Image (cartoon, rainbow, N blue to C red):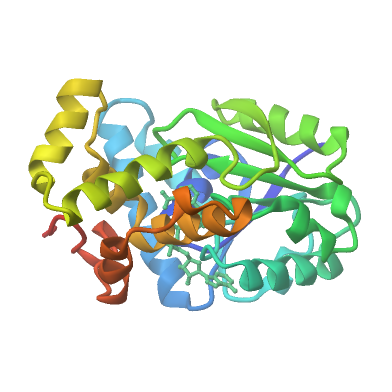
Length: 283
Ligand code: NAD
């Protein structure tokens, strides 16, 4: 598969990072969200991150200008019709993603690959609602996308080997390390990570230790670069909760029950860095 033009759906935490890595690697990108102001915010974030790369002498001012010129903004999914691949990074909600993929499979050109950056939702189920389930695949980037090397390539039951090979090769062209996993709730990354974050919430809620003590134990004791609460704030507490719900329902196993403290934080709108308040507060 030759890829020239890439569509990115959702311009939030992950979408802006995904658009960034494709554009900086020379691909034309169409970045779509439901409101223009969301896409503008993403472009401002990408500009900031490119400036950081200039400071570190990883790119030049001319590279930055060329990268930004490769990104086009839109609020209409129809503008993704001629993309060779679309990477969906919209809110973690099954009904929403199912509709997006159904629309994409009618709008996109034949042969286009439809990838989801979902953290935990079934690729097989998303694919089943489309006209081209063999072209639907998971391309699970890690946060922050420009820095993190891993991409989980998630093979759904109907995903073709050709599609898996195409997104594996594409991830390598972005300078990433793709790892193939099968489609079970949470894949590998979040099946292992999220129960740890959720357990940290139970530990805090039960008063075993303070937020800072728990983060310190995991950083100094386990050599984790961030504590579970710092990481949860970076990921987004709504995203963490949504993933725990998927694990809980997907395995019908009470060991995945979301902690009530996590639920309360989300109900209060304390979603982490993106709302400037989560387990920590941010300026
Ligand atoms: P986010 O809330 O920061 O951004 C989601 C964006 O999707 C928002 O800007 C929203 O307006 C947009 N959106 C909603 N409905 C849309 C639609 N119909 N069309 C286009 N855009 C729409 O969320 P995020 O953290 O960037 O997560 C996006 C996806 O990436 C989720 O599936 C999540 O599970 C996954 N993911 C998140 C992380 C993380 O650390 N946050 C890591 C890996 C994967």
